[in-house]
Figure 1 (tube, protein in one colour):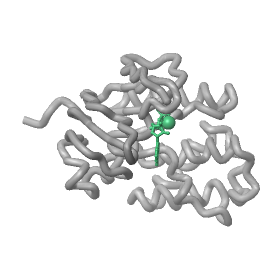
Figure 2 (tube, protein in one colour; figure 1 turned 180 degrees about the horizontal axis):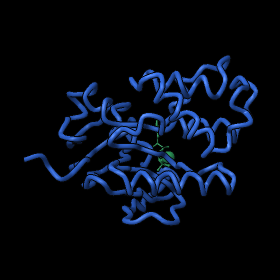
Figure 3 (cartoon, helix red, strand yellow; figure 1 turned 30 degrees about the vertical axis):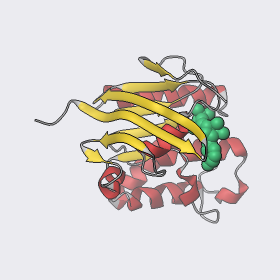
Length: 210
Ligand SMILES: Nc1ncnc2c1ncn2[C@@H]1O[C@H](COP(=O)(O)OP(=O)(O)O)[C@@H](O)[C@H]1O
Ligand SMILES: [Mg+2]
């Protein structure tokens, strides 16, 4: 029987050089739920998210994502997750809309659904007016909103959001929470990290900072 947990982290350890950042982290996230990792700057939240999303190697323990071992099955893990901070993959010369459609197609959406999803997200993140402008003309806040839109384009079963509302204006912050709550109500699991959570429960706190 498949586990009821989308994410299982056991005794996770990670050091940078001599600095031990994760000293045995345990986490279980049930499907269809949200988990917020709380903690001061330097507590190790981003490190944990990067490990769970296959971007960073770890020193000890185990991490299973939808039954796949992140240290052995990176491709399988990448197929079931979405991650913010994917703007590394966007193209400065393309418009906001073109970037979203391109990312949708990269995630193997049909051209029609990529376009429909792009329009929905442009609307939600207040980017309709800027949709036809190349990314290189976007302000910092607009880039941040586009980055979040990109991470939500394909709605994979698990989404990692590292500080999803940091740097957003109030309107986009509300839009972000609306989207997160919609995803939660639907069939998706969301695992995310936000240093200033307002409406998220349950929470997992890591108190040790820098
Ligand atoms: N690439 C790195 N090399 C060395 N130390 C790092 C690196 N990345 C993060 N750290 C350190 O690891 C600790 C945890 O960082 P991070 O996971 O970014 O924390 P958080 O996201 O909770 O603010 C911090 O002390 C940070 O300075
Ligand atoms: Mg962080």
